[in-house]
Length: 303
Image 1 (cartoon, one colour):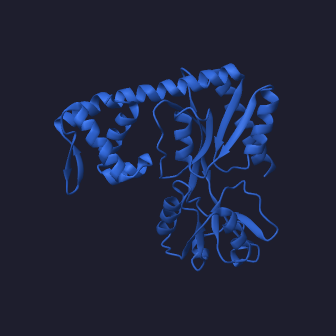
Image 2 (spheres, rainbow, N blue to C red):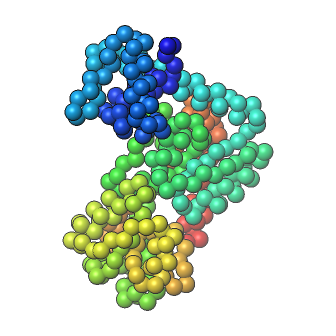
């Protein structure tokens, strides 16, 4: 049997997860199929690559030797595919694939980019996970990503990405029902929300950890409801919950947006891009960043 890249990926998945079951799930195959494939690879190489222990799978000395050669090959193949796709995209005409977490600056940013880069096809991919967007940029599936990083919860930035900081610290506000007792105050103290139920979207990277840290620092241990923010704002309006929000959030007629006393929670706003060979051109990145800064500035000024 000739070894193929998919076989090397399987070996790395087993080594990284330490489990045939976990590796099979990651690779999208059944555990018996992966076990059979591993046995065929070992037969082909003439030795055992993993020792099966009660606690999982560990590479044997032969396995470590094979893995040390396999990982660079896999990375080189990944780079080849990414670069080829980028070259094909350039040949097809200029395009800009944007990823973003939710932010009201995005519509203005897209509008400004279409004016500044006429003839460039612009696409938008939204995701609640900033880490997922960064991985898409690193793999060449997106050109840039506009993401936020919750204070105290650093993002996992893949190698090869350039990070530009749009806003070093944007304090997070709170949204309340318009008839909430604290809504009459220009600045809300966390202590005034001690009896409220909070809502957070745990799928947003760092959001739950950041909010929990903020509440604990204030000595609060409120009831917390998990769910998406579209639902959260509806529940805020009915008085069921309160939740953190961006200061640029547009309030509904039945809600209010207020800053929190002492600005206990903040986020960094970042633009990530893959630069260098087959990545975003430096001059184009300057334009993209400049138009994002302009769009955010317009939003803050209006707000």
